[in-house]
Length: 339
Ligand SMILES: NC(=O)c1ccc[n+]([C@@H]2O[C@H](COP(=O)([O-])OP(=O)(O)OC[C@H]3O[C@@H](n4cnc5c(N)ncnc54)[C@H](OP(=O)(O)O)[C@@H]3O)[C@@H](O)[C@H]2O)c1
Image 1 (tube, protein in one colour):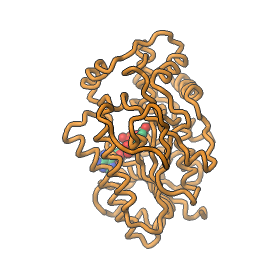
Image 2 (cartoon, protein in one colour; image 1 turned 180 degrees about the horizontal axis):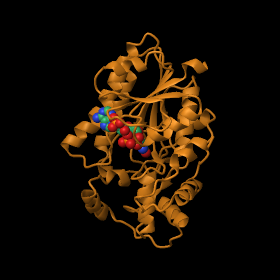
Image 3 (tube, helix red, strand yellow; image 1 turned 60 degrees about the horizontal axis):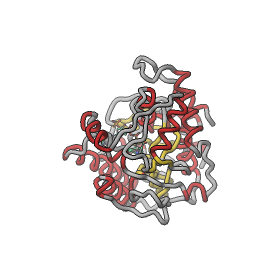
């Protein structure tokens, strides 16, 4: 891809993953333009352009002549799934994908590649079988309370696949839980629970967690942008999904605490009601592996969870106390420098 055409449009780029990717890609020569509904400055981005995530507007001109689009838009799923939130979770993903498809189809010079976020939650709740892109089973399971999320994921990917953009390579990023230092995201929540001696197995602890370190997330996106032979769904997860019980043991080891109170499912149900979230995020077994990335030669810097946690903890400790709301963590420079 010639240097002069390396403009990348990042819809939804003012959130957790966008704030990782924008500086990462900017360091590597991309001119990053964020699309947001807010007037947000994103580190590394050349500018933020307003869009509403639903309707064509002046923002669509940013796509014409751009080399790439990475769409991260979607209302957070960390909330109670009542009717209004369900509508917003679905519409923010489906409509933003649709309108990007319309904008790309109208371009004189469409982007050569479009990565659209999706989720590893699309696969069936599974303890025994590791889900690959080719052989993984897609679907919901009542016991895992994931039927709504799987429906969202399927509709999201179908909308993406149906977008009439023939000249543009499309990749659906089936993302696992990204472990990074952003306040309020999963790593910090689990770290804090662990420090409070509440970091025991959750809901029995047999269920698998598919995760990826923030640096590998950025590296995988960069790699997928460059690899023109890859299209369709790609599992963006570390190669070693881990049962919840073993994951929490790694957190306790890294934290240096021996005790971690386990949480039974009923406790999680009560807690999630008060925390305005859903137990599905914890009880579903996501045993997903990155077969396409590995087969195509992508090498993970953090293939196993222990070293991934250790790296994050080292940076967290260098930045301060996870419980101190006044501390700003040294997240962005560390991600941008790790080449
Ligand atoms: N983080 C993870 O571990 C993970 C795992 C699996 C899948 N994913 C998916 O990856 C994407 C990015 O995740 P993230 O962690 O960066 O999420 P995030 O921090 O919540 O950011 C998502 C962005 O989506 C935009 N958005 C929210 N509601 C919208 C709406 N109604 N219309 C248009 N845009 C809307 C927001 O942008 P503005 O407010 O700036 O407009 C927000 O910054 C999401 O689609 C998420 O489902 C993330």
